[in-house]
Length: 605
Image 1 (tube, rainbow, N blue to C red):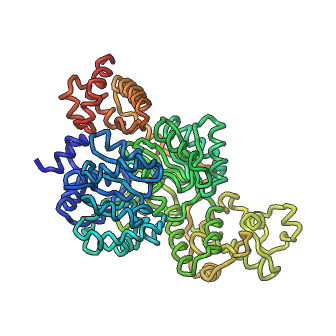
Image 2 (cartoon, one colour):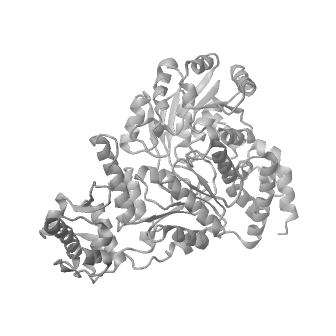
Image 3 (cartoon, rainbow, N blue to C red):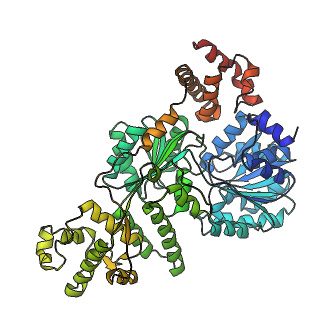
């Protein structure tokens, strides 16, 4: 049998490779370099784990995730792979034990952080052993174009010079063409083969809703669709993270905060509970989630607009790694656009940097404002063409567009008149009050009822007008002034609209947010087990939780939900039957086979 396939079956318990896995693995086994772009949940880890086992020596994995190395090593040890890590969490005795195992050729994989590998002492140590390959995980970190730049990754270009005969494989879950090129150049992988997988994650349902009391919207979403499920909620600021976690917790959701301002012990506790307990929701900044292999995250929510499509795609990809139906939910509004534009304008970077940030934001806004399939728009960003998916909000509840030219002219004219006639600039709220003829202390104080545009926009409600402002900002026909107050000004593109030479098509703004029919589709897909199998599945989950607690490891390291579902459906009666189920390799059969069969036998058919 092919050595790679043998390891896949005997060690990891899978009977076939997925997508390009086999081609990548064989290429690296044969000594070739590779750059691998593959979405989260598609099996990137096997692309370096199997070659590390098959080739002579130890596979050295460079990972930026010190906090997760223990779990990654635990998962490998559980299937019989000889794995270890070296990082600052270990005492001198433990580091010495690992170093000795490496030098003696007793390790298949060794995980190290880029900061450690950049030290000359570490390089000399590695030179005294036999290296099977170098795997550079989360390779987008090497790129200044990437959304998580790590300077220590730059030193990894030295690997090619120091170990020219050792194959290198760089892997990331997301990369635009610019980031892809940057990774290749910075890591000196010009001669590497490039493997770019299909970026589609069909089990994830993308939903974007108008922002209106986002914490309440989030709570309603969780209660209606994901009660008791594990999930991740992303917010931009630490304050928002803490307030959202507290709000969810006060309404019965097990929610924990995670951000860089917390001490390392608190972050470690949050991460541990998320990995080891069922139904925990982590509210976090983007500092959380990279490298977490938890397969049963059922939703990822954003209550603030992400800065770029690349980051959004990778964050949402942390949902549904097990292939089961999951939701990517985002609430987005006018203030998000104003805030992001203001952050770009005040950025300390040079003009080129601000232009890159603006381009990233424009792509994110295009995804939010599209009238077409979200997935088509998202995949197009990565250069992939696709057909409408039938499983996003715009497919399930089609959105209509409308000719907003007159509305845009009314709004822009108000901005121009305020500035030219009175030397005044205001934010969206005051402009909308003027257009709707709303008498407030502020409009009366400034005499705005005497403006020619006073009350000419009563045909639209406040929420609809906010949608007009938001979309004009997104289209670059309106801009945020750099005065620090969020006031709005016209742009060069405004002139054509005011002159009537350019029409403006806008996305229809719902007066009231409605729950998508997508909810029913997701729930129906999730409830696909027969009643007897569903009951056994829950019993198997209880047994798994007990095993995980005893071993102090995350539940998915014992078995993933997909494996337990297969056991519940097939009801194996012998270890031979068990060995045919995906996810049960030789080591796990030896460790858990008898206990699994007892649970099945004790449960009535």
